[in-house]
Length: 89
Length: 450
Image (cartoon, rainbow over the protein chains, first blue to last red):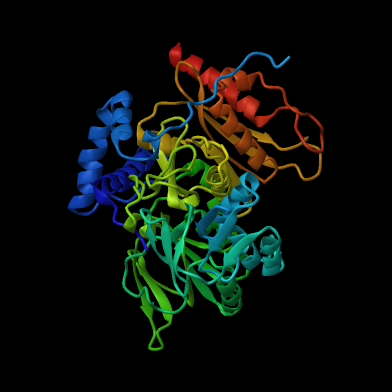
């Protein structure tokens, strides 16, 4: 049984879905790959014509900060990425 | 008195955690509850039995039931846990009542997302997951003339190939413009789609599912889509994986934005003495630290081991993920690690691209196969942030594993362009495609800079 997504679940699910469609559109324009269909209805127009371009103009550090502020496993204790060390011998 | 660990779920995460508990505390009582008739089989192998690459389902069983008895792991089959009380340290089990635990591990896995259209209760809709049902469905496939696969996710693309191999008229419908669009790039999938067409598969992209249409006996006879009605005796549902954690959420255990349970690097949840692993949890991505849910069986097993060792009183940490992946698709094998162009573009992450087409072994050696490698790197530092590949099969998995580690350790295109590689005509070409792609990426970065 699926669980209720809550606000952050709703935001994550929709933004992930529509940002990917916007990315497919960008790649289609740049590379001539298959394009997604045109948006239909108010919901699709909002996410693709308002949300995605707005997200696109925000600098990555700000976007990253917003994503990291959402609740999730990333806010618990996780070791930092490993760093290369000196020669083994 | 031995400590009692209760594990909910008998998949890769559940059994991995059972082994982890026993490794840390051999004297522990370990009880696994599973709703299925079996444990220790590979559900990921089911499409390959359907496709005829594996001759029978029995080969998918990794261990018999006695192996778990011998290991001191008490598996309760076809048993449902209906409630968790984290304050009382109990679970409620159908037919057994209230059962106390010292440690609880939640490994309840995933479900297919509800297609959410009329006709969902018709016969002939196949959700590939349980091996016993798969054995029954395999007989249905033998009688099937026309099938529709709904959505080109990882399992969907395996089933498309499997059904085509079985000679079934196969239609794939997907709302995206190309297959596996949620993770792969269009140029990686193009040869796969061509190979499906060669197999006679009908591809319907940018096509939305509207309804399953039934006959008067309650059996599906067609699928209605935004592009019209497609006749079908069988429909394979391959909607995305959603975490099956209603039980945990009802117990007040915290859930993240992906719907997966929130865990730390020890796979500990928000509740005391409760761990979780597998598709029920979310894990941060190693580069962006944004959480991901619905990874692979190897991720689930390793997370289960971690949860089990810690629940058993040991000490083990899981790490943020870089997600090496790969799968056969059509006549090709595709794979990658971390970001591709589509996912990096979606997140707005800038990248420099290095692309090369090479070969898997010496060009004159029989069985040589094409390998295309794409590397994505951070502009400026040229640190690797992602990779995608398509090839005849040889070395795609090993390259994906290696490139995930290269990303994890912060390797750059410079590092990879000067990488040494094995040369031996039967197993490796003079020019390793990763090296050529990295070299091209360095040149591309210089061209953009200049």
